Amino acid sequence: MDLTQLRCFVAVAEELHFGRAARRLDMLPSALGRHIRRLEDSIGMPLLLRTTRNVTVSQDGAALLDDVRALLAQADVLDRQFRDRGRRRSRILRVGAIDTAAAGLVSDLLHDFREQRASVTVQLVEDKTVRLLPRLLSGRLDLAFVRPPENLDKRIELLELFHETPVVALPSRHGLAKRRHLTVAALLGQPLIVPDRASRPHSHDLTMKLFERAGLKPTIAQVAEEKQTIVNLVAAKLGLAIVPRWASRFAVSGVRFIPLSQKDTTAPKLLPLAAAWLRGSRDPLRDEMITILRLRLSKYAAKA
Image (cartoon, rainbow, N blue to C red):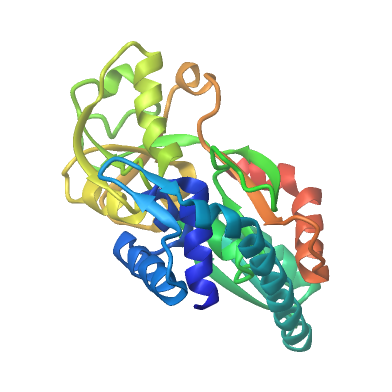
């Protein structure tokens, strides 16, 4: 029995779904299943009851669940204490960000932060929200810039910042590339590249909801997971994409980024960005970065 196995048990017990629990823990479902089996083998009893359709917690699993949660909470406290002592000596701040936030907001924020704290080392991790939040909860990140999740863990403090501006990425020689603005209607029938909804729900829904509000149906030609890949596919003339404006900083040749018309972007905002950290935790360096963020938020938002 080890802490990883116990974390796997709690995740499945709370999600009642191996796929969702695996995404929450940032691991493959097959690896999650192995950890659960080894845990059950080590204690000699089933903790979860599985069928082809669902997962439930066994009577023994339910009896142990609260104690396991308490044990993991205490382990997390000790882990943070050890990490904090080491970080105070080394003056390291660990920041995670989704791709467009890393290209836009975080690069500007780090510039302003280093003007005041040049001696601090900032470690930047770029990933999806579904992978950044587990790192935050496990103490591997001090601060993360993410899309607000549908179900926020109560241990996370969330500061909503602003909404990113959507633009259309298209090949520079495309017939629409000379326009100053584009409407959603102008994209009707055009092959579109969208992110996978399982890993990027906000970015996927951006395209779908803009078309839905216009009373139109998009033509989806390709699904890709990373925005950098999506922009590269646009450069290869495989389709168009609606992406956050900060994606234009990816510097891919052969791609033009054109704003959507004002009437399409005045609808309810679809690309929220938020800062997240562990509720109740103390971190002077992180708090100083958040203070700079709050003071200069209007400047950063104007570029989004």
